[in-house]
Image (cartoon, rainbow, N blue to C red; front, side, top):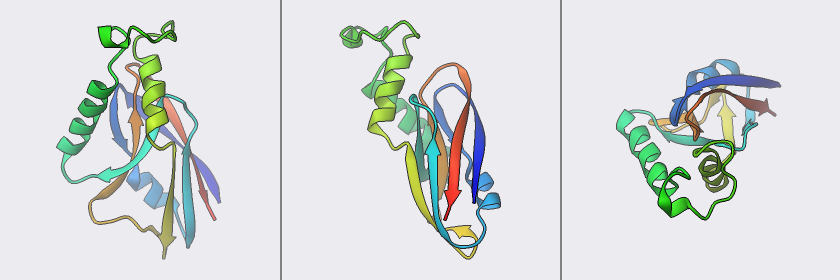
Length: 134
């Protein structure tokens, strides 16, 4: 069973789509999620306190700032904007696929776990996450 989840983003940050996955995943097996982009990532992260998502986004922004920051002057891939190459770096550091067991029609997530697209670019995007349950 396969589908594609379109996830709308409006700039850097974490966008939860756990409910969409739960509504789709039926039966049992292993759910694989894969994002079809090179400047966004997938995460399983806490979904109880929104400060967690804010702090994660801020941490990665500080870790890999835009190319307009003097510390990033060594980067050469800059013609797609100051957030593009840093987005690629973040996506190289973070997962672009996830595997989640599905038991009795429910992703086997922990109590406070949610599934997120982690957008690394400033502009709005429609990110595509391919899901396969087998």
